[in-house]
Length: 172
Image (cartoon, helix red, strand yellow):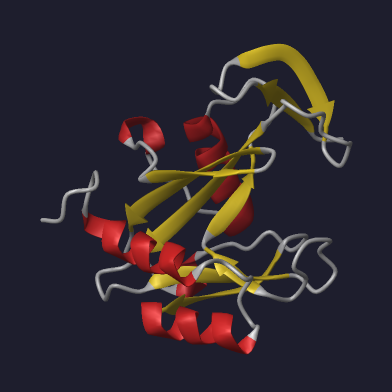
């Protein structure tokens, strides 16, 4: 059973928890994290979700994603999910989210990190991840068009690629 903290719209804890899969009350929110790994060839590591996964089965997604658990900060969740899903340890203590996307019942923090590693070096969580590979922005956008990638907004993917070496909204 996975327990999540309940937050208000300002990301303040409400002092309550909820069980994953339970109905979220109006005015309650939870925290989600995504970690996007980029290599020196400017490719993003993408993962294919297992065909038996409840959400988006068999589809490709960004490198890592999941919900923060009770007691975790956003960065704690990013570190845990990265280790769990792809068996990769990264020193997240000095990393902040590149951007946050608000959705109807939560906050989604996106972390962008640089890593050069062959796909064989990742240890996949068999319950969640079928396969990983490196992909260019153009390849991911095409996968969105063909329905092979979860239906993220193309502009989000493009922005993540733009943010891989930047902080803030000002172009370098």
